Length: 178
Image (cartoon, rainbow, N blue to C red; front, side, top):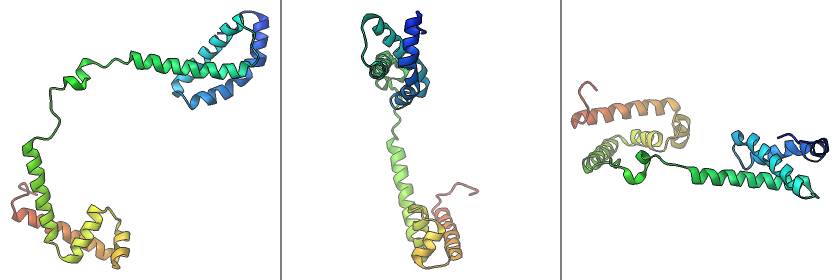
């Protein structure tokens, strides 16, 4: 919103416009980047309207205050205007996303079977498998922790996967062809 008369334009160019960079930097900290141009313009509009009514001692300070207030007004408008579609209301949920009892029992059985498979592994193989799959350590970290070579870690992991697969197959826990 450009000032209407030359006196206001000169005042604006001298007292307000030099602070635009700092004002934009200030607004980056409190508003979305996509809102900054609108907030700067709204701040200028408010400052110019106030100048018409009152004499100002500190246009710079007032500009920053008006920018902060404009940002708060924008946030308030958005908060009250936020409309949630009825289909997305948590109170209208017809479908239950929670697992059924059958799913919970099945998961518990799968975890128990996995624990049995891990328990059946030889001691070093089990240690390597747990450190890699449960604790998510790298092969190098496992080698250092167990004081073994990295290629030993790799072969123990291969052995653990194969033995777990054999264990599941023996229990009838693998689909055909796996």
